[in-house]
Length: 318
Image (cartoon, rainbow, N blue to C red; front, top):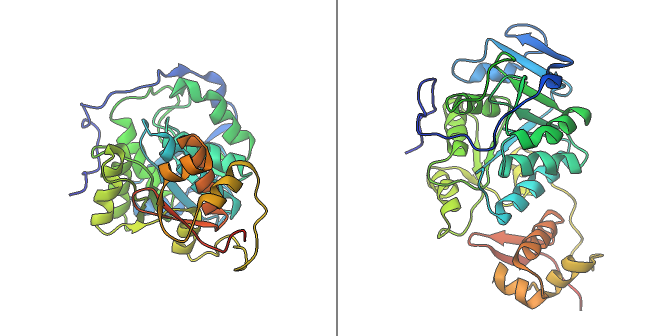
């Protein structure tokens, strides 16, 4: 069963982490776009109860710009943060805008991945522009706008964050996107709420497989059982969108690799190996090994299988 999308008055068990800060400067150069007016995102008409108006700072991008939501747990692990960062970076590098909720964890990693790739990203806030939630993301939100992206909210500027505003926010995250990717999520997670809104609107949902023993794999696993498309890289997401994946080396060629990636490439083989075993063989810490493996995956040099298993995708060094 999928979680029912939350409505105002529900979600009383939710708590807010990351204290909100007052942020009057965020209201500068912001504007209101009303439903039916030019500039209102037409894709939002698909979701139940589309916002009657949006407060917008920055730009949603040119007409026809393709957007994908990358969402997941606030309390993610290094694997989830690295993967969200790399998927978002790969999408942004292909000209796809990355939409997320501006929260800690997977959301922040997705926004930063898109920005570091020189791409476009949209943060949908669960409060008015007079507030910054979480307070520590002020610099991130300012960078989103400065780099050509957008901050979006359906709330009037003075409205503070509240437990009910974030489940409602999730329908906008889904509605702005043509596809929703859930990276890491516990059995009860706001990311699953976003996926539920997407399903109600007929928006495809993708999920990243993970170690089924890990609590943060429970959400993606439930989505996969319900028919979500499994994805493990930006290339997989681009393929689901009908877009070309990044170019891969021709078979038999030797990739130009350095540092951690070169050590991992030497450790990889044609048979699946656990990330931990590869880390030990390459002499790397687990977090650094996962980051390197995901970088190799984005380059088309390795493939990830469920359970954090990796194998080489092309011929290596002789």
